[in-house]
Amino acid sequence: MTLSELAARLDLKVFTTGLPLDKPVLGGYASDLLSDVIGHGRKSDLWLTMQVHPNIVAVAVLKDLAGIVLVNGREPAPETLAQAVREKVPLLGARAGTFDLAGRLYGLGIKGS
Amino acid sequence: MALRRLRADLHIHTCLSPCGELTMSPRAVVRRAREAGLDVIAVTDHNTTENAAAVIEAAAGTGLAVLPGIEMTTAEEVHILGLFDAGAALGPFQAEVYGNLPDLPSKMRFVDDQVIVDAADYVTGFCPRCLFGATLFSVHDAVELIRSHGGLAIACHVDRESFSIISQLGFIPPGLELDAVEVSPRMSVDAARAAFGPFDDLPVVRFSDAHRPEEIGSAATDFFVEGPGLEEIRRALAGEGGRRVITP
Image (cartoon, rainbow over all chains, first blue to last red; front, side, top):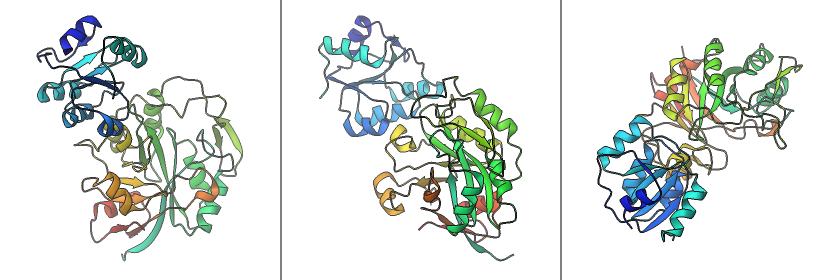
């Protein structure tokens, strides 16, 4: 499933409005420790996190993630959004918390490792 | 003036920290620091500086130098140590921190009383704020706040699995104006550098993060400085004028 399909079905907010959302999402990962995502995230994962620091963009680039979803209605720091646009990392937002959003993604066939 | 080698443990909690033992009173901290052969200590409670003046006063005339400090919790749950000059007026700084500390309950099971004391170890009050909570400051804002009040900013226990800038943010964000990184007593500097480094070009220090008297001085760093003031500590970390640090 692509990011744009998921965004539509889960009513996700798109922060990086100019970026294409045609990347396929092959799996998911949820963590708020960036060191853990560096260790366990996989290519084309959609990453669910509370963290809004600019370092999340660097981690997404490093692991070649499909995109990042900020949960619980959190907004990216301005520098984070600027960096996501610069690095072409799709940055989305959900009103739901991690548990609920991960459950809904799982129901749509997006699974962990 | 000639340089002297001063042994410093600049990360020590008192009974004001929610996780600090009640036995960490000013007189006990000073006594144990002297027994441990320390020349300089810093009082660094979680998100508060309110017990620092009492420890400074308790150490007067003993030969032990005491710097006021803080261990701030940032919005990312990174711990940043702020160290200040002994004469610094920290009221405005503390007001900024308290003003950005969410209003959560401070009395819970497993959370010790947050005891404010005087230099003679008498209890003068209890801090009603949730000191173990995260402030609203990002790491960048926390470092800037500390520096704007004349302080030094050090990333705490970078080898730990929680509350470390490495655990929370994966790596040290570029552009963050840290004065040093701290390794906990659990790990040697070399091992920490290999596992979590290279820490850019930042100096590495090792302090105890003591929450109990017997932990004071369990890790320390030697500063080659003219004296124990904050400016000398800063210059040693920056390697200025022959000053330097040796981290055992």
